[in-house]
Amino acid sequence: MSGAAPTVSVVLPTYRRPDLVERALGTVRDQTYGDWELLVIDDNGAGSEAQVATEAVVAKLAAIDPRVAYRAHPRNRGACAARNTGIEAARGRYVAFLDDDDAWRPEKLARQVACFEAADPTTTLVYGGLEVVEADGRRRAVPADGSAHQPRALLLTNGIGTTSLVLCRREALLAVGGFDEELPAMQDYDL
Image 1 (cartoon, one colour):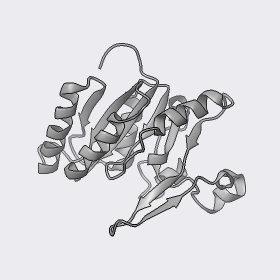
Image 2 (image 1 turned 120 degrees about the horizontal axis):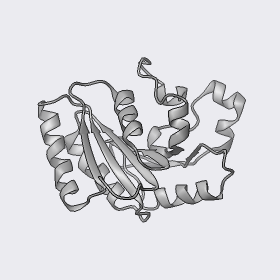
Image 3 (image 1 turned 120 degrees about the vertical axis):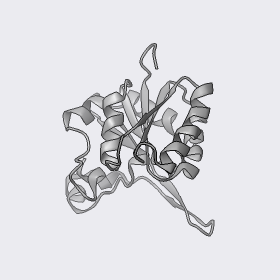
Image 4 (image 1 turned 30 degrees about the vertical axis):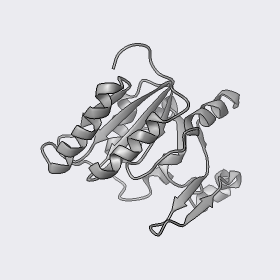
């Protein structure tokens, strides 16, 4: 990628899900907000069947959209390492994360960038609610809960949920050292 830095860098880590990554890519491409770059971080390991398939899916999109970039880890290092690789490569002021098995609504980035632009300059993260789609097709809305990020609530639970919901200032992610790659679970909560 070359040219002016985008406002948003989307980091999409992927591991053993080449069948799902295409849908995730499509939900980034369908955003109503267009000033983004998409960094697909393939954590399958070089030469694996999943890596070859994932690279082919991403290459199709990259051929028609120069905002899409692909990076592959030579060996599986885990989701936190993949996210950190994306943070380091990001050129945008903001970083959004999208897990390969998640999907975004078309207005997600537009709404979140607008929130940042209206927020106090010390704001480092914005997030929204989500809709859970069960295997049987049932849908359940989970609205964002502003009380979830009060100090006491944060000590008790991760009220934000998944990394796919957030948009963060890149400088803040770098300041805290990104995701702790040593933690076996709850890395997003720790961050």
